[in-house]
Amino acid sequence: PANRPLDWSQDVFPTMLARRDPLYGHVIGGYWCDIGTLAEYRRANADLLSGVLYLGELGDHIGGGIWTGGPVRIAPDAQLFGPIYLGEEVQIKAGVVVNGPAVIRDYTIVDNRARVDRSIISRNCYIGERAEIHGAVIGGQCSLKAGASLFEGAVIGDRTVIGEGAIV
Image (tube, rainbow, N blue to C red; front, side, top):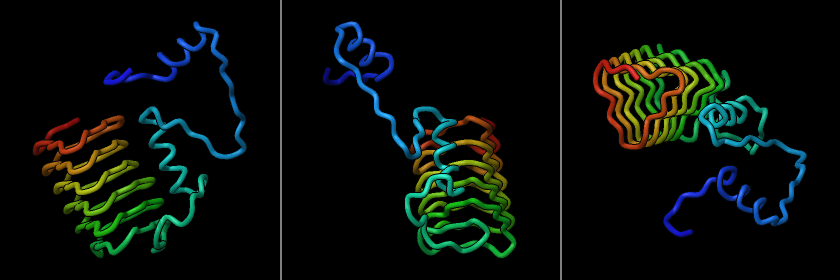
C-alpha cells in the first residue's frame, strides 16, 4: 500500500504464505550479505575493504591498505592502519589515528588528535578535535564537536550535531 512501510520478513512473506502464493528461492554462487542490520552493514564494508568482496578498484591505493577516491590531505604525524577508504578531499589532521576497517567519505574533516576506529563516516562531516569514534556509523553532514565520543553500535542520523564532550 502507498504511504506505508513494509518489511519483507514481517509483512510480505507471511501474507504470501497465508494466501498460499508460490514462494521461490535461488542459490547464488557469489558473495551475499544482507545489510539490514548495523553489524552486517559494517561487515559488508569491511569485506569490501579487505578484499573478501571485489567489485573493482576502490580508488587509488596509496599503500598500507589505504585507498582514496581523489585528492586527500593527511598530516605527516597522522597514523592510519588499513584497510581504510578515504573519499575525495578528506582531511586527516595532526595526531589523528584511524584504525580500519574504516570508511571516511568525501569532504569530511577529521580534526586534530581525533580517533576513528572500525567506523563508517558519510560525506561532508566534521569530526572535532579529540573526538573518538569506535564501531559507529555516522550519516551525512554531521558534526561531532571537540571531545565527543561515539561507541560500539552508535548510529548517528544525517545532519546531526553531537555536542562538545558528549558520549553516545
